Figure 1 (cartoon, rainbow, N blue to C red):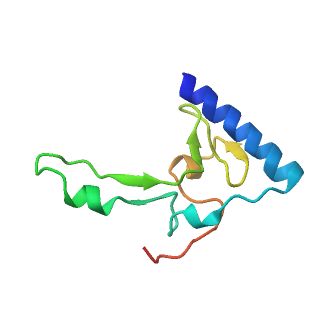
Figure 2: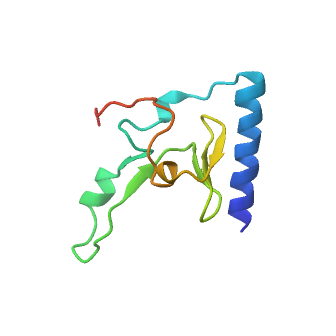
Length: 99
């Protein structure tokens, strides 16, 4: 519950920065590709044979508030859109497939 509240306040603050003060976050940390994550190749290659998990590195700007809402600090948005819930990019930064 505490992490959800912290993420919500963080997203509200970023919304103020982006919309009212035209603040720009660093876009070099946004993963390449159409999603808000990239595969964690090192962790996936070094896992046990009995571990069937697929590890990813998420975008530092992607925040989950609860089971319904999530947001993007880079854009300053909070939404219940299923595309962002599936971690599809809304920002369009580094949207190529060069991984």
